Image 1 (cartoon, rainbow, N blue to C red):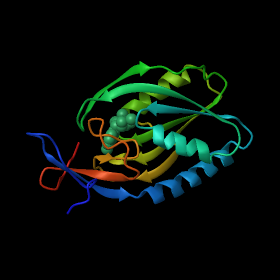
Image 2 (cartoon, rainbow, N blue to C red):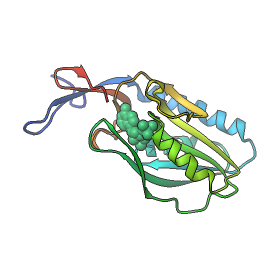
Image 3 (cartoon, rainbow, N blue to C red):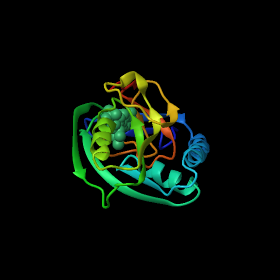
Image 4 (cartoon, protein in one colour):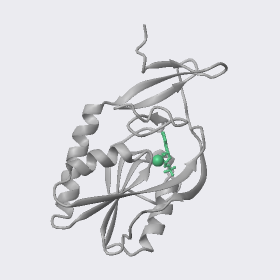
Length: 195
Ligand code: IMP
Ligand code: MG
Protein backbone atom coordinates (compact mmCIF):
# COMPACT_ATOMS: atom_id res chain seq x y z
CA UNK A 1 0.00 0.00 0.00
CA UNK A 2 1.38 3.43 -0.86
CA UNK A 3 1.89 5.92 1.94
CA UNK A 4 -1.21 8.15 2.15
CA UNK A 5 0.81 11.37 1.76
CA UNK A 6 2.84 9.95 -1.10
CA UNK A 7 0.02 9.02 -3.41
CA UNK A 8 -3.28 10.82 -3.62
CA UNK A 9 -6.02 10.30 -6.13
CA UNK A 10 -8.04 13.36 -6.99
CA UNK A 11 -11.72 13.62 -7.84
CA UNK A 12 -13.14 12.47 -11.15
CA UNK A 13 -11.16 13.62 -14.16
CA UNK A 14 -8.19 14.83 -12.11
CA UNK A 15 -4.68 13.46 -12.50
CA UNK A 16 -3.02 11.14 -10.07
CA UNK A 17 -0.54 13.06 -7.92
CA UNK A 18 2.30 12.07 -5.68
CA UNK A 19 5.13 13.79 -3.84
CA UNK A 20 8.75 12.64 -3.76
CA UNK A 21 10.64 13.88 -0.70
CA UNK A 22 13.41 16.29 -1.67
CA UNK A 23 14.39 17.87 1.68
CA UNK A 24 13.37 16.21 4.93
CA UNK A 25 11.86 18.14 7.82
CA UNK A 26 14.99 17.43 9.86
CA UNK A 27 17.30 18.99 7.27
CA UNK A 28 15.01 22.03 6.99
CA UNK A 29 15.08 22.60 10.75
CA UNK A 30 18.86 22.22 10.97
CA UNK A 31 19.42 24.66 8.12
CA UNK A 32 17.04 27.22 9.63
CA UNK A 33 19.06 27.16 12.88
CA UNK A 34 22.20 27.95 10.85
CA UNK A 35 20.46 30.74 8.93
CA UNK A 36 19.15 32.27 12.17
CA UNK A 37 22.65 32.34 13.66
CA UNK A 38 24.06 33.87 10.48
CA UNK A 39 21.41 36.61 10.40
CA UNK A 40 22.03 37.47 14.06
CA UNK A 41 25.81 37.52 13.45
CA UNK A 42 25.28 40.05 10.65
CA UNK A 43 23.12 42.29 12.88
CA UNK A 44 24.32 41.58 16.42
CA UNK A 45 22.70 44.46 18.27
CA UNK A 46 19.63 45.40 16.27
CA UNK A 47 15.97 44.58 16.60
CA UNK A 48 15.07 42.58 13.50
CA UNK A 49 11.75 43.01 11.70
CA UNK A 50 10.81 39.95 9.68
CA UNK A 51 8.36 40.51 6.85
CA UNK A 52 6.88 37.38 5.41
CA UNK A 53 4.88 36.76 2.29
CA UNK A 54 1.56 35.00 2.83
CA UNK A 55 0.87 32.21 2.70
CA UNK A 56 3.89 30.22 1.55
CA UNK A 57 6.44 31.94 3.79
CA UNK A 58 4.57 31.39 7.05
CA UNK A 59 6.13 28.11 8.19
CA UNK A 60 9.61 29.39 7.40
CA UNK A 61 8.89 32.64 9.24
CA UNK A 62 7.64 30.98 12.40
CA UNK A 63 10.58 28.58 12.60
CA UNK A 64 13.12 31.28 11.72
CA UNK A 65 11.66 33.83 14.17
CA UNK A 66 11.86 31.32 17.03
CA UNK A 67 15.49 30.54 16.19
CA UNK A 68 16.85 34.10 16.08
CA UNK A 69 18.17 35.31 19.43
CA UNK A 70 17.31 38.78 20.71
CA UNK A 71 14.61 41.21 19.69
CA UNK A 72 12.46 40.11 16.76
CA UNK A 73 9.14 41.39 15.44
CA UNK A 74 7.24 40.39 12.34
CA UNK A 75 4.56 41.40 9.89
CA UNK A 76 2.87 39.96 6.81
CA UNK A 77 2.21 41.02 3.26
CA UNK A 78 0.27 39.14 0.60
CA UNK A 79 0.75 39.19 -3.13
CA UNK A 80 -0.73 37.12 -5.85
CA UNK A 81 1.30 36.02 -8.82
CA UNK A 82 0.46 32.40 -9.36
CA UNK A 83 -2.91 31.13 -10.50
CA UNK A 84 -4.22 27.72 -9.60
CA UNK A 85 -1.53 25.71 -11.31
CA UNK A 86 2.23 25.54 -11.49
CA UNK A 87 2.77 28.33 -13.98
CA UNK A 88 3.33 31.94 -12.98
CA UNK A 89 1.11 34.57 -14.50
CA UNK A 90 4.18 36.82 -14.43
CA UNK A 91 2.16 39.60 -12.83
CA UNK A 92 2.47 40.51 -9.18
CA UNK A 93 -0.37 42.19 -7.36
CA UNK A 94 -0.45 43.41 -3.76
CA UNK A 95 -3.45 41.88 -2.01
CA UNK A 96 -2.62 42.72 1.63
CA UNK A 97 -0.22 45.40 2.86
CA UNK A 98 1.87 45.42 6.05
CA UNK A 99 0.26 46.52 9.32
CA UNK A 100 3.09 48.83 10.36
CA UNK A 101 5.70 51.14 8.88
CA UNK A 102 9.16 49.72 8.12
CA UNK A 103 10.89 53.12 8.07
CA UNK A 104 14.21 52.98 9.94
CA UNK A 105 13.87 49.26 10.69
CA UNK A 106 16.21 46.41 9.88
CA UNK A 107 13.93 44.39 7.65
CA UNK A 108 14.42 40.79 6.57
CA UNK A 109 12.00 39.67 3.86
CA UNK A 110 11.21 36.00 4.49
CA UNK A 111 10.04 34.05 1.44
CA UNK A 112 9.46 30.38 0.77
CA UNK A 113 11.09 30.26 -2.66
CA UNK A 114 12.93 32.46 -5.12
CA UNK A 115 11.86 31.29 -8.56
CA UNK A 116 11.61 33.78 -11.45
CA UNK A 117 12.27 36.58 -8.93
CA UNK A 118 9.24 38.61 -10.06
CA UNK A 119 7.66 38.60 -6.60
CA UNK A 120 10.78 39.65 -4.72
CA UNK A 121 11.70 42.22 -7.34
CA UNK A 122 8.29 43.82 -6.85
CA UNK A 123 8.45 43.68 -3.05
CA UNK A 124 12.00 45.01 -2.77
CA UNK A 125 11.13 48.03 -4.93
CA UNK A 126 8.06 48.67 -2.78
CA UNK A 127 9.92 48.30 0.53
CA UNK A 128 12.94 50.35 -0.56
CA UNK A 129 10.63 53.34 -1.10
CA UNK A 130 9.59 53.08 2.55
CA UNK A 131 13.15 53.81 3.77
CA UNK A 132 14.11 50.86 5.96
CA UNK A 133 17.50 51.07 7.71
CA UNK A 134 18.55 47.76 6.13
CA UNK A 135 16.68 45.52 3.71
CA UNK A 136 17.73 41.87 3.37
CA UNK A 137 16.16 38.77 1.87
CA UNK A 138 15.99 35.26 3.33
CA UNK A 139 14.56 32.44 1.22
CA UNK A 140 14.25 28.81 2.17
CA UNK A 141 14.61 27.63 -1.43
CA UNK A 142 16.32 29.06 -4.49
CA UNK A 143 15.66 27.84 -8.04
CA UNK A 144 18.32 29.88 -9.90
CA UNK A 145 17.64 28.26 -13.30
CA UNK A 146 14.27 29.97 -13.52
CA UNK A 147 15.41 33.52 -12.77
CA UNK A 148 14.04 36.31 -14.98
CA UNK A 149 15.21 39.27 -12.88
CA UNK A 150 18.51 40.30 -11.28
CA UNK A 151 17.18 39.87 -7.75
CA UNK A 152 19.20 37.75 -5.32
CA UNK A 153 18.74 36.56 -1.76
CA UNK A 154 21.16 37.35 1.07
CA UNK A 155 20.35 34.12 2.91
CA UNK A 156 19.45 30.91 1.06
CA UNK A 157 18.41 27.68 2.75
CA UNK A 158 18.74 25.27 -0.16
CA UNK A 159 19.45 25.66 -3.86
CA UNK A 160 17.21 23.27 -5.77
CA UNK A 161 16.85 22.11 -9.40
CA UNK A 162 14.08 23.33 -11.68
CA UNK A 163 11.27 21.14 -10.40
CA UNK A 164 7.90 22.12 -9.00
CA UNK A 165 8.02 21.59 -5.25
CA UNK A 166 5.37 21.51 -2.53
CA UNK A 167 5.30 21.30 1.25
CA UNK A 168 6.54 23.39 4.15
CA UNK A 169 4.32 26.27 3.01
CA UNK A 170 4.51 25.69 -0.74
CA UNK A 171 1.30 24.71 -2.43
CA UNK A 172 -0.16 23.25 -5.56
CA UNK A 173 -3.64 24.84 -5.90
CA UNK A 174 -3.62 25.52 -2.13
CA UNK A 175 -2.87 21.92 -1.20
CA UNK A 176 0.26 20.31 0.36
CA UNK A 177 1.30 23.43 2.33
CA UNK A 178 1.11 21.45 5.57
CA UNK A 179 3.67 18.79 4.63
CA UNK A 180 6.58 19.04 7.12
CA UNK A 181 9.09 18.40 4.30
CA UNK A 182 9.71 19.77 0.80
CA UNK A 183 8.96 17.37 -2.04
CA UNK A 184 8.75 17.31 -5.82
CA UNK A 185 5.20 17.15 -7.13
CA UNK A 186 4.68 14.30 -9.57
CA UNK A 187 1.64 14.39 -11.81
CA UNK A 188 0.17 11.69 -13.99
CA UNK A 189 2.04 8.42 -14.42
CA UNK A 190 5.02 9.44 -12.29
CA UNK A 191 6.29 12.08 -14.71
CA UNK A 192 7.79 15.26 -13.27
CA UNK A 193 5.73 18.42 -13.51
CA UNK A 194 7.74 21.21 -15.12
CA UNK A 195 6.26 24.63 -14.53
P1 IMP B 1 8.63 34.09 -8.37
O1 IMP B 1 7.91 35.39 -8.34
O2 IMP B 1 8.57 33.44 -9.72
O3 IMP B 1 10.06 34.14 -7.84
O4 IMP B 1 7.83 33.08 -7.48
C1 IMP B 1 7.64 33.27 -6.18
C2 IMP B 1 6.38 32.57 -5.72
O5 IMP B 1 5.91 31.61 -6.67
C3 IMP B 1 6.68 31.79 -4.48
O6 IMP B 1 6.50 32.59 -3.34
C4 IMP B 1 5.69 30.67 -4.58
O7 IMP B 1 4.45 31.08 -4.03
C5 IMP B 1 5.50 30.42 -6.03
N1 IMP B 1 6.35 29.31 -6.51
C6 IMP B 1 7.46 29.39 -7.25
N2 IMP B 1 7.99 28.18 -7.47
C7 IMP B 1 7.19 27.31 -6.84
C8 IMP B 1 7.21 25.87 -6.67
O8 IMP B 1 8.10 25.13 -7.15
N3 IMP B 1 6.20 25.35 -5.94
C9 IMP B 1 5.21 26.09 -5.37
N4 IMP B 1 5.15 27.43 -5.49
C10 IMP B 1 6.13 28.02 -6.22
MG1 MG C 1 4.75 32.45 -2.06
